[in-house]
Length: 406
Image 1 (cartoon, rainbow, N blue to C red):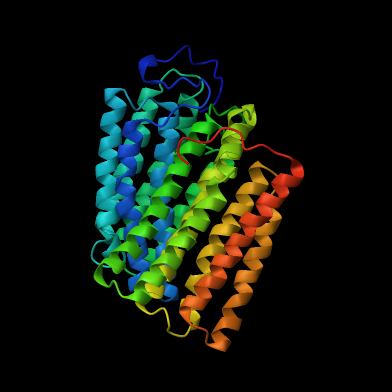
Image 2 (cartoon, helix red, strand yellow; image 1 turned 120 degrees about the vertical axis):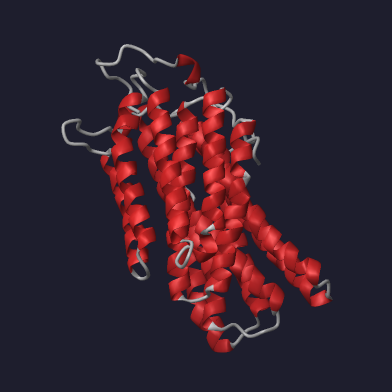
């Protein structure tokens, strides 16, 4: 994905290369591909609901990390290639099928379906990367990066399959290593002996498009949390359940508001005009920070599930951790996101994260009802929204154009 390579004369498949002329629109093919991840996020939330313990939390993090690697590298690929061309579309549909198999294997990924999960992961990562290298042949801004990344992704895919062949706890260790190696590869520019490395400053990236793609994934995650609570409400329409549903819905709206009210469009604008900094900024903001926010939404969905099942029950430690930990995790990721890209708005989020973490032992000691804990979490998140509005009024900033995904 480097900007220049004298050994490359020109693209062999120019019709497959996506031209970067401002913010490239998200295509219907990309949105159709994303539909699988509604199921994926639901599977992750259900996995944590069924395994509400430290081991279950660790395994959920591992599964989310692997799934995110599949999705984000596919998003980077469509940032470079045209999803409206038949070869690219066919590969996206194949990755979609592989992602569906990946998601279906999640409930037993650390039991009997481990090899299916790992095999689907390997097939998607290697197949998509091999195609991207073929499609970008001769392009000085694409082929070098794809060529550097393919050996790393092949190696981690083989490692993932090895993890699927062993039992726990070795499987957890091997799959964690897969995530760590891929993170290391991206951070170091995928160095290969004799070829050097690819530097983010020379990547050809349309940062605004990547921002829009990740905004779409946040919407998917938030939509999943609403589906979880709506499904529970459909089976019990009592007054207490309806009240709990409204409270859970308000919590989802608050997280949406924090992310989309003004930050989303500001980030798109920053990355669109970032120039050579777009590659490095995008790798940090999207590869590293967005899965933290998605994890926060998933944990919040688990908290909402507990709220709807027993709104008047006392908060125990496990329930308090998901009720307060979900918004705290989301806001921590968003604080870092704000700091990296906008250099503002992060302090209020850090303060609220500390408040939410402090609320865990206090509410458990007082044995407050789950509903009261959710109210505290909602008001804390609302405090971020108020702080943002106050800061924006002081700065005299206008609203500006709205993102089409808002």
